[in-house]
Amino acid sequence: MSWRPDTIAEVARRARDGVDPFDIAVREFIDTWGRLPPDECAGALAAEPAPIGRIEDAYLAALAEHLASAAGLDAPAWTESDARFLREPFFAGGLESLKAMLIVVSPSAFRRRLIFIDPEYLARPHAAAAADEVPAL
Image (cartoon, rainbow, N blue to C red; front, side):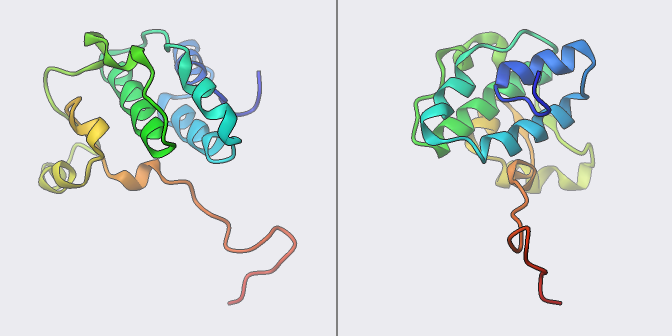
């Protein structure tokens, strides 16, 4: 097993087995995704993740659809399963005051599954400088 999950199915496996909390496994996968060669992207999304929880299952489908779209790929067929959609909305963060903002800014793959998140959560931090350079202050 690699340090970071390299497939979306591995995210579910790690969360289910208690190797990583779900949110950490997702962040690690997003980091891996940002480094994948384009010819490996479809494979990282292809295998359907094992069920781990109602919200998590829908979230992984939304994530796979979102990443596939951003890479110019078709979303895997498993993302359209009824089990991958919520019947009641889920708002990340749980603060009532954020709900209106999250409805507006959530990526469409998440919104259509009634998951409302800040898209910043899906962004990887970018290095300000190369590893051998010291950033200017």
